[in-house]
Image (cartoon, rainbow, N blue to C red; front, top):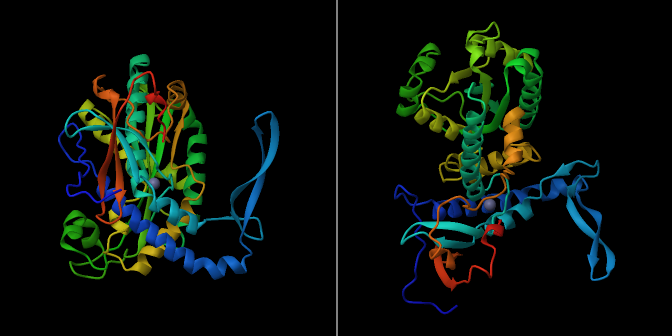
Length: 404
Ligand SMILES: [Zn+2]
């Protein structure tokens, strides 16, 4: 493409006029790609020693009239048959994630995404952002529908935490937490009172070497109790704090029944379920106003990890790579979001697909729907630039089918 004098940069605002973070998320995904590249180099010798190799599966495909058998790569495995993360591949996938975006214009500055090449790597900042928007919309919709049908169902917001763990121990800590969640749901009382649930995992990383003013002010009581003063070394530096957020639906009668559980009961139950030897911090609250409800659904739809906490230059390359490697291997193959009970049934009924990352529910002027604007990430100017505009006939293209 010839270099043009006036490069048109992507502007996409939400309905409150706030610019959507396309450029920031893409820049962060490039930082993640660089980290993956360094990790791939770092693990090269270890993978070689462990006999890491690509495994293939045989798939049948119809080509014309014939059925042919192909070998398709399944991923990397070590000599003991354990699956390992392919960092090299992730580096490439994340680098090109969201480099091509197709929009329908809503007005001068607002756009509706209809197609993009997202990578779906679990830690990708771009995909995390898109996925959290999807989860927010889906969970809000599921709750809205259930409340129309079952007027006696009330959502509760539950947060379950464990003590901070080291970067190396994240995987085993998550194993215990996921087993704990299953056991908690198997509890007889929970089975009786909980009609449906949605659960998400959030992981925060503590990269502050010292106790900053902000930290001290926010948790003054915690620090005072431990005689930790402003400017002291942060005892939680370089640790990870994984926790679950969940929405539970209970019947209104629950609040007056013998089954009612106070925070201390949740603490006891989570302690037992996750097999902890201390009382974990748990939080349970009822949603009272619709405004509040909206905010709390947003809590559920938070990013799995905060990219700004880890990928910015606050951390050294080594620190960054260690955390990314720990997160990648600990989250490999894990369900970060899950539905249960009536929430699962309604989600299935609505055919919700958390992997769908385009905007498919915004109102659009049919006249504008005849236009597609394409923007591409320009690695040179580190921004999205306008590439082309196509006017289409509605009969030519099925826009609803524009998944990915
Ligand atoms: Zn991505």
